[in-house]
Image (cartoon, rainbow, N blue to C red; front, side, top):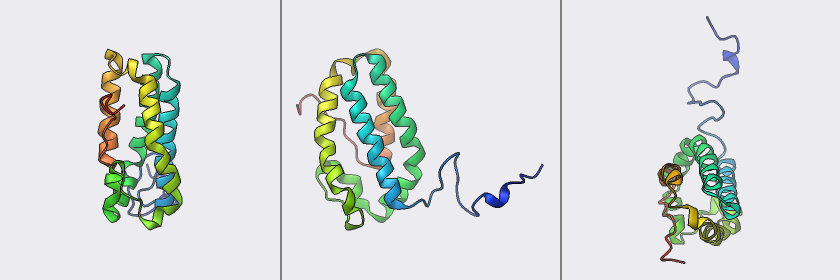
Length: 148
């Protein structure tokens, strides 16, 4: 049976349930930042291993949806892959510079707060999944307690 709404679908574009790959790069970068900021906020409020699992799963689900768009961005701007090493954002994304600069301290606070739950058995798999997804976007390194 033919989809009567096929005229609404973009031609020659990969589509998952909610996203089109060539979405506006600024909107995608904003979505990536919002996802990571929310993850840090939720980890910063975690009071149990279940809270940490929920934060990791929620962030992973959002990241999974934007990986194709972020990969397109990093093809054009490979320096984004090294943002955790202090690399500046390309000028195209300068509007996000302040938000990016605040992420490292937010991440430190979140990991410090949730740290006691990170070695809990139910957290390990969701944490591995989150780190794997982040590494598909940037060279992501979870902060170790040696850095704190």
